[in-house]
Image 1 (tube, chains in turn green, cyan):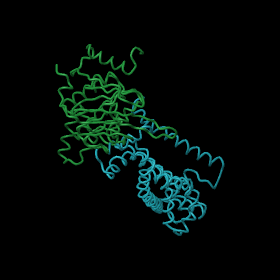
Image 2 (spheres, rainbow over the protein chains, first blue to last red; image 1 turned 180 degrees about the vertical axis):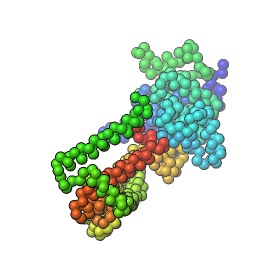
Image 3 (cartoon, rainbow over the protein chains, first blue to last red; image 1 turned 45 degrees about the vertical axis):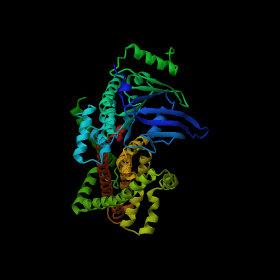
Image 4 (cartoon, chains in turn brown, purple; image 1 turned 135 degrees about the vertical axis):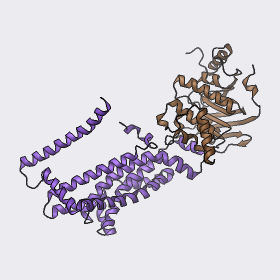
Length: 259
Length: 259
């Protein structure tokens, strides 16, 4: 058994240093993130886990370049992040697909610069990869939540980014679809070799997916602990080690024995 | 109920209501013994007379042409201006009080101003229709753009779109359903205003037909015939523009209206 994390190249991809975020409110300023430091290796799958409202989405929005931080820096490949970049695509919940475009139109959205044939080839490839064959001409409102989410993941992958940022992407899906989508995402991650930052409040989800789970505290969020999930994929969700890791995180978040 | 049965019902019920109304109308004219208000048969003869003289087509065409001109200019001005105002929050804040002040003024109150500016004639009528259509179009475009979810803008920026591309490929299509709603409301108002404008400013068109039939010999059969024509054309205009909302690329925005 080779632990997944060690099979990856060790080159640092993302470096977060001294990151703080304060939102200016009408009455009070709200401190959301406090002095975070994190390194992510190339090709790594990292889950950011924390209770609702702790600021994990804010963290992802800052890393993606949508929000400037109050203090600290985010560097990717040694370069300071100053705004969104097509090399790193943000995947919203399934509502992020453009409702005015077909599945095909959505997946090809970021491919404007390619020739027509190349664009069509890529769209067809990613339609196939996410299992939407036969739905190329369908509009999002004609699709289920899971299919919309697949379309959005395909739209992100089609521009061949080296990082994917996923913000609770499966939060709105039913539990069975969610399980299927996790499996699909892992399969895609293993074939496409992307670095993935995945925000979730679901402990099980984080332990099923990640190489490492970054556990955040309640607001203002700090990093409480980083848990290595050294289990190889596909993971046995009833194995002792899996349960140990999961329960350890439950305890870390302060939920153990209270449910 | 089966589908064909429902379709038959959808035709039969309104038809029955129409027949009933005409019968009641006929009975009321008989019962009161009025010799001013025409019976349905007299109105039908009036319509035939208008058709024979070629006035039916000519006046309808004149009215439609004025609406097309005034409404067309309002569309060409209102949509881009509204998008611009919605795109720049500062511009919207500056312009909004003025818009909200001008909007509740009935277009009919502008008639003296229109005549002072353009004299008696086509231009005054077109100006009134333009004014009446402008505000619903302008406001819907402004609100449509302001209401575009930040997620769509962020996604567009993430794929590296320039400002212009963001506007044309994300903001405009996202705001389109609301813009279309404004266009539909404006067309209804334009058709109401053209009749009023033609009563005062010109000597052709359906509005002129109403006032001229009354003034020249109290031909109430022609007055009511003109009224029916106005209603009928208004109905057709509304049906035509409602079809636009059923295009697949904008249907997502009209889901509440689907029955």
